[in-house]
Length: 395
Image (cartoon, rainbow, N blue to C red):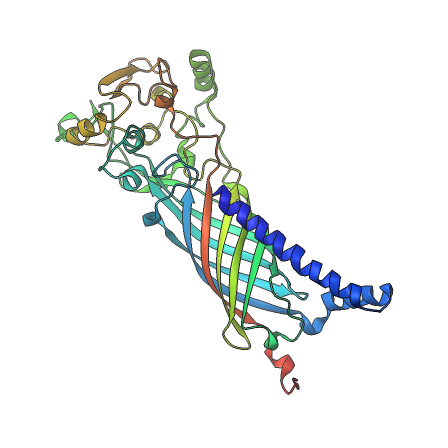
């Protein structure tokens, strides 16, 4: 993905430097004065005869890159989790090749460990990701302002624009996001689901309200973000570290990308774009840190959705364990809530990493890399002011 970003940046630089360099060479061959040349450039940039507005919209396909992916690679994604979106925009062309655009988009990001890894061809790495069993969906609201640079100049009326043009764009945007997860049926202290959990209701299995519903993971604080002050202090004293602060649901993003525009009629353009969104958060998927002591949660739903590695039946659990960091089961005791204990695959999902020989075993997510997403867009633009050129004569 870093290669995509680099290529996009180089392409944008090419669009800016190469055409302007050619213009500079042509200006050198002109025998007009500097003042006249300056005035000509200003007139060309702001000439209302070549400036026009457009409105439009499109449909999008969104792909997520983050902690819940097939592998730990930054460019790892699962195309089966491509999700839809739509956008509306207003734009203006104000020079030979320059445009600005204000764009609003809704789109969905989604992924799951089980869905991306699958149960075949386990390795030590992906079997542990499968056992982690986290999942999310996140509806993104994005408002952005971008500039666009066309590859080919157009200095005439909008109706005389070239049939095809290529362009690059970049700018800044803001998103509102709220990752959600589906509530399991039980909160259990067992390492796996038994065939008849109803026989152990309120002992080993606690039924959860809202089972099967999608709820806000951010509000649950699945990595201990909403432990009360007393619990946070106890956690720090026991484990020698702080729980993370709540993440913001409003984030800045940097959209950059490339596109191609095709002229359908005098007033309609069809465009295809692919855009990269650089974000400054690792929590689009609600996954960014370590497992915490489950005794710190007051809400059993939060505890259940913090560690979901026990939602498999015994047969599947045994198969997964053959490929995980450890092939036996261990019991962990809460150091915050005496009397609470839970069993998991040994070394996996410990209380804040207590007793780990391998630091990977307590990692819930990788907070060293921010989440990103890709937007592929097909959009239709209607150019305003078609009546302006009625009766006009063209050469």
